[in-house]
Length: 472
Image 1 (tube, helix red, strand yellow):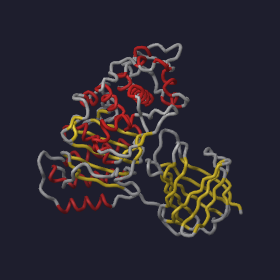
Image 2 (tube, helix red, strand yellow):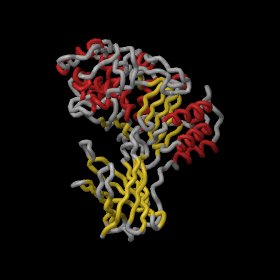
Image 3 (cartoon, helix red, strand yellow):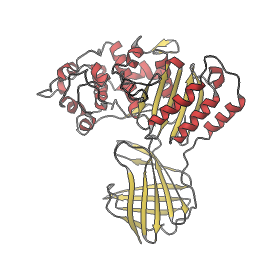
Image 4 (cartoon, helix red, strand yellow):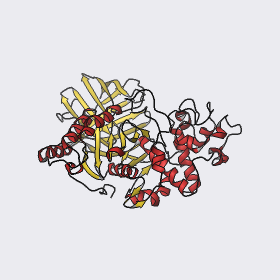
């Protein structure tokens, strides 16, 4: 099963970790919100772990750009297999997809430049690439304003191209290629990866793993690519991938300005793979430490600061005296991690069975309806000719599946309650992702105002503001 243990567990004091420092770390991470899972590994032993339901040891979690570290690892393995070399010219691997009139500098772009995100593009081209039907051809058709290797800009599309090159050279999908070489030896099972319209894995995002999968990958990097006395990664690859190929910036307190390697960020302490909304694999060789985090937050810098400020001062070079009381407090705190759902009265008679006709809005929603279904509610949303009906638990989450824009069904958890007679709170969560939306509907006679927001989002404003009138 995907949640099975592969790392030994230990009391933190035996590994030189103060349980009070771990407790302070957990409290600081919870304050960010929202923490989904945490695993701290010292000297190869898990010294703290916890999940906030519905997230769990056996539940996959979308990792966003933490996926990039795995794509880079696939490049290293492909180089060891003789399929490519990081100094190869990109055009030599994608000749059939080149435009008739290639951009200046494209001919000199090497795989190394994609790994270090120094492709020569002045601005991140990812949105332009992913908006086209053929991502590889779209990337190759872009202007390249700078000589490759001279200008750094974060570039998720470049990682997609790396994944496509490995798949082309290997003749199989990336997960299939990594299976016997990386995933199976590490005990990583049931990993999933989103694919492009052409069927290549997305490379720079879209990978889903469990928390311990992330921790095991971090431990592999910490051990220079060796796992259980077996070398999985080429000797020297981790050192090359984790060193700074892109110079550090001027701000010593900025963890995104410490330099960049092969799809790995340098940090103020060690290095890391990270993904949007708080998906982290922190590797600190100087402390023999790995920290795996999954979250749903837009303030990732506070999470890193919590590790530096609270955990690192609690590390010692030798075992610490047993502190049973602090360890018990830590275990209790980790076991109590939660993401509260709306609570209140189950009443809903004023709106049950009535349709809320919505004013025009940017989501395209035209109507909503809440019906009594015995021990739960049924929420129906209408957008044009499309309708979506989901069960909503009263004070607890009800589980269902919805079909999103992706080509698969997505698990959905929904919970709602009336904390006040005229106020309804609703949370919709996609528990395989970092995302949830929580809204508060205020009923004033037949008029309804709905306000809320997604818990974590990119620069786009995803706040929810709807108004409408009840009919029926």
